[in-house]
Image 1: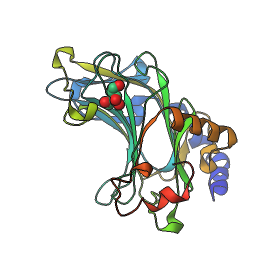
Image 2: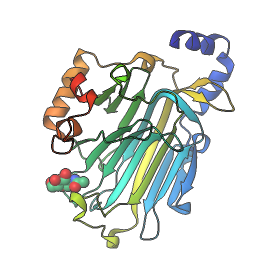
Image 3: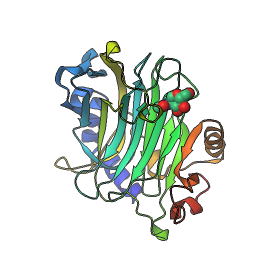
Image 4: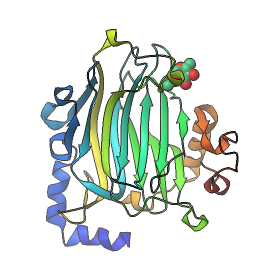
Length: 287
Ligand SMILES: *[C@@H]1O[C@H](CO)[C@@H](O)[C@H](O)[C@H]1NC(C)=O
């Protein structure tokens, strides 16, 4: 299936694919600012985007296109210094009741304490599949690449191309998997000091406002849905995401991340799931 749509794109629609490819990555072409007004700024000819947060509002943007499966890359440089109480996000979500969602959330911290990377997957409105990590680098010092691969078999979260989490499709075991609701890309910076940092104990220090996070190099290798019909957009038209899994080297990296850097895994939380762990937790070694 993936094969034939790829060929269609490569042969019959070669010209439109090239046009799409040329525009991929410009925030002007790809994104709409959704809240925060002037706090969201696109600059450098569409290559850079910054979001800021002050006492009055955060800010955010969403993709103009909707997608059904793809690989989504974004580079982020997070709020430096005392970012306690702030949450920066990069995620996919469908709309309406029973929605699907695939989340990267970056929970700020006091100066010198580590950010928490929060991941979650919602299928048909139900989440409760959190995994959290600390990072092996300072995410405020430079840009790093955060990637969501979403195909029919699995969802893979990657950081600088290192897989940190895989959520496999276990529909056969009755676990809903996001596969039929188109999703947009969303990003935001907002105040969540009621829960984000050290369980909500550390509040946002507004003396440091405005807080700013930076985004660049958005790339979607993905199947678009909607008025412009199904097509792929990408810088290099790489289709590897359609069947992407985690090979032996990737499994080693994921084990390293999960052993050294994971701080929470819902699959290990027996006090929370008193009636037994979710079905997928028993079925995959790499949750
Ligand atoms: C903040 O730092 C504390 C102490 O190192 C750590 O336990 C926590 O996971 C960090 N992240 C957040 C979001 O609180």
